[in-house]
Image (cartoon, rainbow, N blue to C red; front, side, top):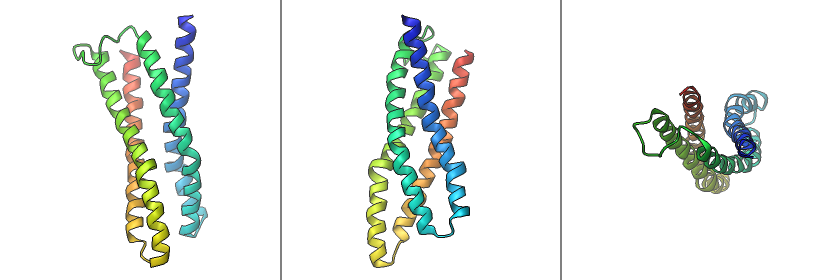
Length: 167
């Protein structure tokens, strides 16, 4: 029974990783450049990206929850794991670093979705009335930079996962 639980945990952990990091890759490297090329009007580009983010965010949120739950199960069964703070064990050290990067990714994700995106929405609504979109545009650029940061962090997490598999 343990092998079945562990197998399903690994499966769902990988699936959640593909959805979250793969979604970031898809948005940054496919959808965003495609929208800029195919849609000439910045307001229409913004509308498309708003809809994409609206659809992707719940999937990312569920993926984060699945990653946490399955990560706990996987760690419970992991033979190399002794303690989060046992830095004499290389496997534990790499796992600790991986979790630091994942926590940073989660913080960035929820900051963007719960604080930054609503603020941009409020400012965009105000800027349409005031004809001064500069602050909203700066926050949109900052938000995009945070997505790029999560992309880089996601690649680092995948690299650390590969290292863990090799230890």
